[in-house]
Length: 360
Image (tube, rainbow, N blue to C red; front, side, top):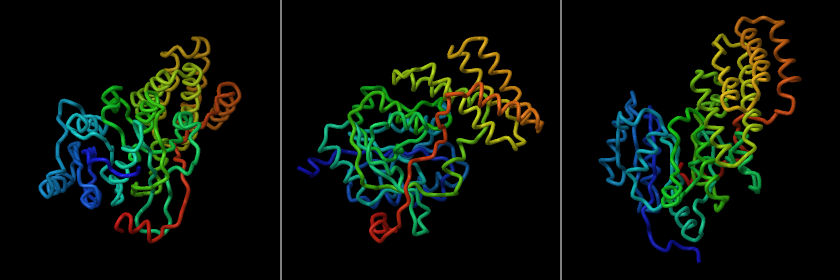
């Protein structure tokens, strides 16, 4: 049996902030769906461009598109917008989407058909990373086996993005799964780790049914090399710690590995930057706060970290040499797990079928 048993409501939940240039095509791709029983709840995060005008135009055009401005009391950020949208949803199934992406015309129909013919709590599809102009597209995730999917997410090598999922709403409610509003970056990775910590009963399809629109070449790696504030780095570390705890990992060792590697990679990536690098010390301090290391070892690591931050800030050649050699040989040692946030992708040529699928 491979057909839609009935036509349940599907909730497409979209946060938006200053994506006026992309919203029209995104919402138009919803209106082109072969499956009609859906609602789109789009929450604007107080955009300063013409996003709200576009959103209101489409909500007036089609009552299935429900427009909200994020209430001030819940705090700014895409994760808060997603959680608010979820609280307003009435669908049996949920699709989280972004306001600059596109759905294939049969996306919702195929996803509903797949999850209705399974016992899975969520199903993974594939997506494209494409500028809509060139004849070359990157397919997000080229892996055929998913034996190490959790380890890949922990290595910041996600095998799928959240836009690729259709999820049973009752599963999200039962497990109290929400987007963490305190996670400033890599929200997609940590949300999927939360999903995987609660349920291993999922399926992976090879169909590609959505497009992550390529805006600039730096999109894939920009955030992974960003210095950020001390508080932001601390929150990223805390999100990683919580994910390790949820998965019953070797928490202290893997947390130490993550923090040390991330500090080193960020310092190295920004060694020629004039931006203050002192906020990176959050990755060193948090390993002490979480008791992942003894006080004496923390003092030694903090001292070497200071040399690295100081030498890079003031461009002292000898200090750089001391730091990089000491860090690699003494500190990192076996802590060499890659933290690079590059998605598992493969390139394919764009054909007529792909263009027809997205009406491009």
